Image (cartoon, rainbow, N blue to C red; front, side, top):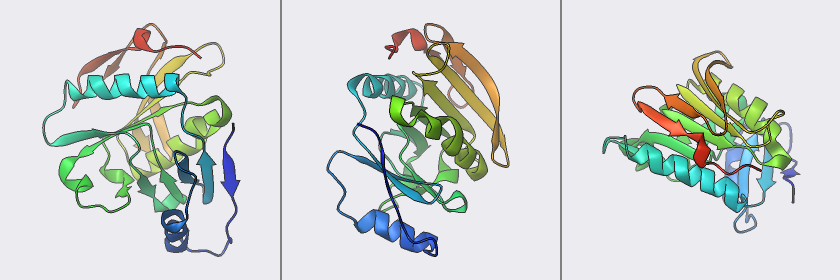
Length: 194
């Protein structure tokens, strides 16, 4: 099943769009995001997708202090890009997340991880990194199971405007180094392909 988009009125404000996103009765288990001002409803990720997110989550916990938390399915907002995203993994300070009802401002995240799904990989490769960079999130990890030429993991950093610099890119099976504050070698050999 592929993603479904929900149209909205072009003259709607960001606040109206977020209110609609918060108040609508969406299908249970679906992932509902606002991407470039368009509400996108996707089915729950496949088991292999979730396994990769879970492995990354587990590895991050081994190196983080108590001041930081690792989240799956936490909404982060980038109003300047008309985006409300639910990354596969987010690392953010504990105190920030405890003071939020439905979402947190994206600039407060230290790391965002997206694992591509076949039906909407373009968002993870183009729209989301532009928004995450514009928000100033220091690190973006893209685990692209459907990359041309085979599955890859790419770490982006040093955001300027809406563009990241590629810090490291590996094929599945190789190790990818996450810099401070993580100082972690992520073994992509643990990730299933396809």
